[in-house]
Amino acid sequence: MAIEVRPATEFEDVRTMVGPKQPDANVCWCLSYRIPSKQNLSLRGTERGDLVRQLVAEDPPPGVLAYDGGEVVGWAGVHPRADTSFAGNRKIPHVDELDVWSVWCIRVRPGHRGKGISHNLLKGAVELARSYMAPAIEGYPVDNGGRKVDLTMAYVGTRKLFEDAGFTKAAETESVLNGFPRVLMRLDLQD
Image (tube, rainbow, N blue to C red; front, side, top):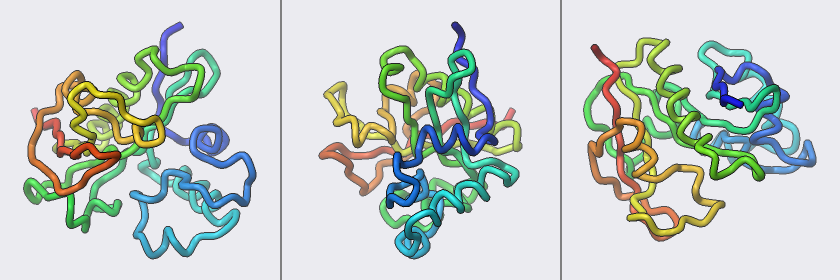
């Protein structure tokens, strides 16, 4: 069956992908890059889920979801960089002053990995940014040189994943994740 990627406008599907098993558990909910650090650290219990419910109702939504038939199988966090912690991140440089979008998290459910869904999610993130007239989209994956990336850290993607989607390296960063340097990959969306 073909994978379909849609804007993340269904809270229950977002919760399936990034929410905790226990509603009051303090897990990321894919907010650590989406909101200011101080706000992220202050959220407790169900406050994270409540905030994500609000973000899902906003325009633009906080990301995209991948579906295999009617089942949600993947998530990518994507939004204008100005609305993310990357706007002021000292380790990830700004290439220029364009109002670019950032994709910072790509997650595929266990049992569905190894089927190319990450590629579908990244393509869907690009299409969402393009539909909002973004001049470019950036990602900050690890440059792992083909070496294995721990699954808990694989959410940022790999340089190869982004290259396969047409992104090119635009800058080095000072960020390191799981022992691998992160690079700024960019795709121009202007015609």
